[in-house]
Amino acid sequence: MKVLLTAIVSSIAAMLIQPVVLLLWFVLPAVLSGADMAWLDLGPISFYSVLFAAPFVLLVGVPLSLILWRIGRFRWWPLAASGALAGALFVGWDIPGGDPGYSSGGNWYGQPVQFVVAGVPTLYGWLSYMQSILAFALHGFVGATTFYVVWASVLRPNNSFKPNPLRGSA
Image (tube, rainbow, N blue to C red; front, top):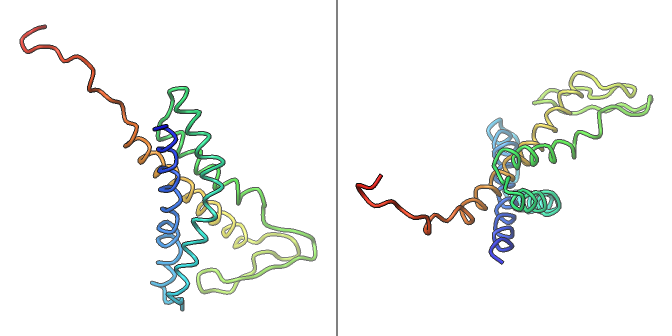
């Protein structure tokens, strides 16, 4: 029962950290660079980042954590790497480009650029692709790390029944 409750609390923490990551990674730099952003949009943005993280935490993070816990290999690094990989794969499977007649442009840090021209990704298209992969990997990494910290703080080893040697005996 304690493992189940710990998994639930850890999952909630991993989901609730996502708006913080989004604000630090995307919103704060946009605001600092002078972007016009309505502060009322922060609530929905935060809500949707939690909602978007929920399937990753519940379908990837919790089962992986339970498996690692069961086999005695529950460690930060495998969990954090798996979280980063899950986030990166979600975005990375769809490489830029498309049909030969497809073109796409956008804004790259205040400069209008072409991302795809006649179905072929440009340098900015690849840079945007890599930036998306890194952003989602960061979300997965931070979520998994938060999950681990909460889990480990609740289910840390109990050393209360280990015998302590008497002073002077050795």
